[in-house]
Length: 422
Image 1 (tube, rainbow, N blue to C red):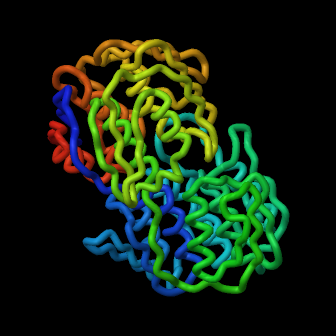
Image 2 (cartoon, rainbow, N blue to C red):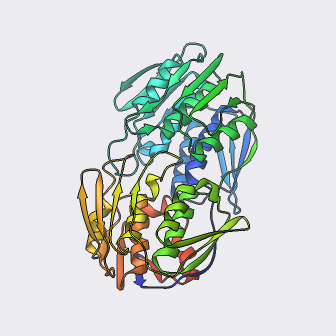
């Protein structure tokens, strides 16, 4: 198992190119199931999650190949297995995205209940409810979701709202299934995240008929078949936000290339409100901080609100702010396993239900810490960049799921990160 040794505090300077979006790539990889033939996805990141999903597609019968430029070719001409095995699906929640495409193309699917990060309860009941509305018969057997349809899925008006807002992966699953359904499907309370818009745009390029993209109402006119395509994945807004926080927490300046600021307005607005400058520059932006960090309040919300996937990173940043801040988690109320670990680094944090009160301190102090999930591990790396001394971050396999060789990208900017095996 790998660990990070990180020396701080450091100053960062230079330019970094933001990779393609992990959260857009995975559903679009699943969408390749819908079109028999070879599709090519450009700008996919080199991540363990992408490798796991590739193995999942291979188990279904697809041929998957990735080149050195980040392009993935998926030949789904043959789907001779409709079972998403536990040993693969348990590693990543996005594996559930094969359910809708398999059901639409093959008329049946068996997918293990998904795994993923330990960030609280994440049921898939809305996914299943939506597929049932389209005409699928679904039941649970031995830890597997078993779905089947006699002839063809049928379009219908479907409401996808849940107790914590719209479901992103649920929207992806129903949207993909509806493209091959008979008639018209209207998805109400659809997720509006850029990753869903990217999926919808990709499906339209494949021959689907989807309108209302980017809004909470998606209308899908079913077609008989889809075609393989070449498609360019959008930049990763969560990776971009993480590097923005890296500049802010180290009181530095970074140039982020291939960054869609228009996908990050809630994040950019919050950074500017606490004293961080964000300026558009070419296809990206320049982020810098010169003065102190101001305190603020953050409430995570569905897009276009503040993303839950940047909550932990901003908590590390606000730990060094002047005054008290409050962070309220409304998407995954239990997503606070990083609180105790940041506390080991002298952050002054108090959890109150689904909120954390952050009392700013003058400095963070290095300590051994344990990464509990993907975004929490990023927060610990950011905190270590600003902390005094050498921080040891354990279980960095979590960060490899969502950040491509982060130490090799931060070190040229001035970080001091060593990856070691234990």
